Image (cartoon, rainbow, N blue to C red; front, side, top):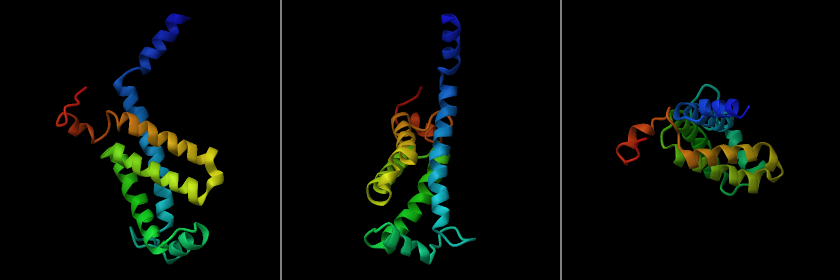
Length: 149
């Protein structure tokens, strides 16, 4: 039985499997924010913010300067998920989404701690700690910065 467990661990304890897991973590986190981003823009446009987005940030979220915070959130929710899916600036993008989740948790939906925010925090922290993995464009820069596996 112990040998079977060791074999199973051996199958998943490698860069390839970790790369797949990190790719899926990037996709999962990116999808959450991308879907939110698309609700903030006009149908058929890429980044034309809907008028109701400002109302949402002012009335429901209670954010200061809703025209500015709404625009920043809309752009961030588009840019960082794209970077995550590509695996480009993975740690920075995950950190940015971590901070966005923190703001959402503290100021917008404090009752949503266990579900879904803890999942977003966990995914972001994994990506901050491990990077984008084998299937990320960040890997192209690894040799430049002296981190070749």
